[in-house]
Amino acid sequence: MRKIEQIFLYGLIVIGLITILYVLFADAIDGMDGGILNPTTALSFLLFICAGGFILLKLTNWNEEIVIIVALVLSSILTFLLYFFVLIPLASAEVSLAYTNESLQGQVARVIVPIPIDGFGEIVIETVNGLISKRAAGYDQEEIDYDKQVLIIDVEDGTFLVKEYEPLK
Image 1 (cartoon, rainbow, N blue to C red):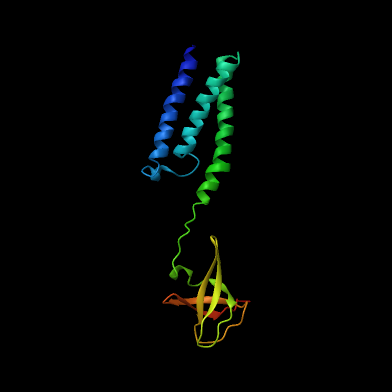
Image 2: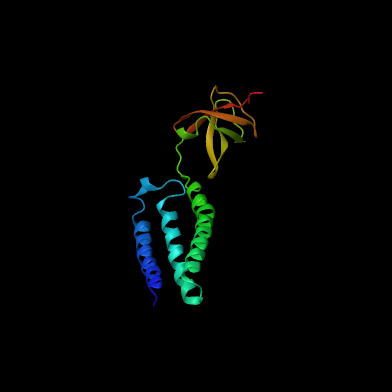
C-alpha cells in the first residue's frame, strides 16, 4: 500500500468517526452552524476527498497528483450539491408545527359556517402547516356571512372574535 493510499484511508476512517460524533452531538455544537463553512459541509468535503482519492488510487493507474486534483474537484462538486440540494432545504423546512391561539391574532381567515348575531360560526385559517378551523363570534356581535374574509381580533375561552376584513385599497 502506497503512503498516499494510507493517508486517504486513515483520513476516511478518522473523518468518518468525527462525522458520526458530530451527528450524535450536533445539538451541543449548535452555535458553530452557519453559512457554507459549517461543520457538516467541512466534514463532508474532507470525507469526499479521502473517499474519492482512495477509490481512484485503487481503481486507476493515475499519477498521485492527478488523483488528488480529481478528488478535490469531485469533492467540491459533491459538497456543493449536498449543501444546496440537501442542507439548505432541510434548514428551511425546520418550521414548528406548534401554534397558540394568541399567535393567530391579526391573521386573516375565511368564514366556513356563517356567524349569526350573538352566536357562533366557524372560520378557517390558512397557515404553512395547513388549514386550521376554529369557532368564531363577531367582535361587535355582528352577523358575518359565509365565505367572507375576517380579521382575528382576539381570543376568549377558545372562541375567536373576528371582524369582517376590509383590505386597504
